[in-house]
Length: 216
Image (cartoon, rainbow, N blue to C red; front, side, top):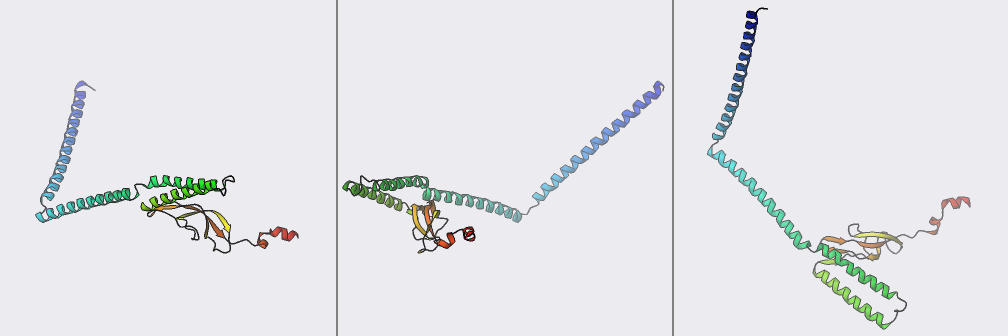
């Protein structure tokens, strides 16, 4: 291949590359023009809204804003009410330990052989009962009251069964013993009552092992 042919090939390739670059630029320009037209068309559509349509659009936005504000107000009011109604919930729950300790102290003193039937014990028990009554009175003023248990049907929402006690005089599931008193604060449970519930007595025949009867 001589120099002239080589030069012609190079010139031809250069021309083709130039044409391709030109075509690419033209395509980019066409795409940009198309995008600009679409944007212009959308803007025109917005501009074409009638005053009535624009008013309805604003009304809708305003209604949504007011609805959101109302929901926030209701949430705030609910949180404020809960804080006011149950703000002392944790404190009240801890204060129940004082009542428990009074009950335990009373039981220990009453079972002390050295103190039984003494005037000193009677006076101490009287003072403990007064303190216990005062605390229950303070609780009641703050809407904290004991859960009813004895002779009530076992309610899993209020009571926790710790044992079963044979008692034919009561229907099965009736509370016959209160191990620890439960308390409510308005409609909230501070703690459940720990109780013993009745069950039917097992007959002697039922207690026998069937295997033993077979062996006999």
